[in-house]
Image 1 (cartoon, rainbow, N blue to C red):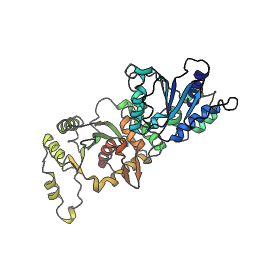
Image 2: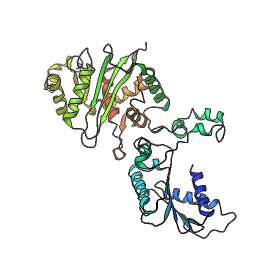
Image 3: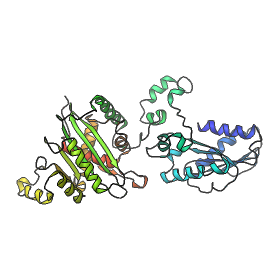
Image 4: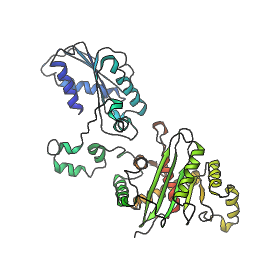
Length: 403
């Protein structure tokens, strides 16, 4: 698509004098070398037969048209007159803040010169510029959305046998099928993630209603400020751990989150039949309020202290003695991450990606160093839903016999 639009832009310049004294802008990634490369590609179309005037590496003049390439972090593309063409190339891979800056700079020309604005990209991460446009009605953003996936090219630019080989590659879903968050993380392999999704589809017919005969658990990762508060509910069914609810809230209000948690506890009967609720232990105020709301002893620290008096009771499990159990991430975070990975790698975890795309997104982009989960908060990687899932998995043994 990049090559097509570079050639089409060149054609517009030389096939008519309409755009003489106008400008065309090409915006690439943050490296200036990428911008210069696209100008070289245009020059290569003409240089063998036509003498081109000497220009800077990022600029070419064609029949009175100035074509200039800019890196995505350059604000110098603002302020020009007579801009008729703006192309943002691989814009979903711009750094997040530069995505917004580049889009704003391009769209700022709409009322000045009404240019073509073209975005060409392979999908990168959910939440980026492409998913924002893809999930928004066209009348709101003004773009025409075109999807060129591999099916269009089979028998044309793609040999069917080569495609079958490519299907085995971890990047296939991103490069050929338009999936976000593919081949980014390292916690799970792409094959493991596919199995998690396939198992999630296995139980799609059981989505409606609540099966009160299964064992269930909920994880609640409480967030304030820029973090989200996330809830994930799981159940043990047919030998698998299935996610039956997963939701995160931005800018959470404590009272609203308490009410939401209480509704989940009563709806799924997480305070009965041996079911459990696990909450990040770093939020004692939230835990006390939640315990009060469901009629449990809010003085849980003293309760735990009394339960674990004596060497023989030091590691006594809290399950069965209280419905809401605090879990300290600083002590158990690595163990919980290891358990989450074990469930996934042993094909015991089932998540319906259509119902819970944000949770699957966390699993796809999750990166670890050793057993420590990396969180790049600068680009919005909070991993709150993943944290709520690993809290919920505290309820289960790592290996559950398949039935």
